[in-house]
Length: 233
Image (cartoon, rainbow, N blue to C red):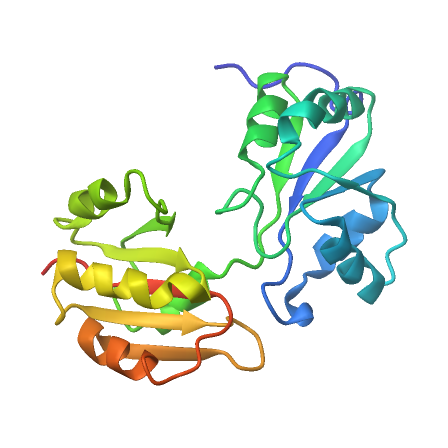
């Protein structure tokens, strides 16, 4: 495959901007600078991103781009880039494309030989994995498990996985998911459950699945969670 041959100044550039998963101080200087220079800022939720822009005194108009309208707006965004516009995309928290919208836009931009750059920055699973005490030199990221169809098939496939396995989970499904992990991996499998990464009440629950479930059954479950499960010995 040959690199792009067109004049780099003739087309615009798509920036994927990681946004804080909790503490606003996790925003990078570079991300702030690029947002200030952008012609268009796309947001998964304009209300959420508006709060972020206001905090850093970035006065930009916002346009929505999320899983319910991304197909309809895709050609519009590609046209902006072809006209030389600098477009930045922010999801609600973390890095676009990681259990969030963004993949479709990146794929389409690349297919048109347009420049794409994802900035390094916040994402919830990396600090949760490093804080887990489980091996993090090799791991597999599963994101959110399917709610119904394909859920058991996915867990069955993972039973032989020897790398640390990382999941995302919502508070109202957390205990159900942990108990289902017991069914597939045994109650003595080590796990770390992290909540509210980088926020004031960040907490990590570590131990066997049985120990962590027993503790969480008597603990108010609020916030967003990352589950890091030890791989098969």
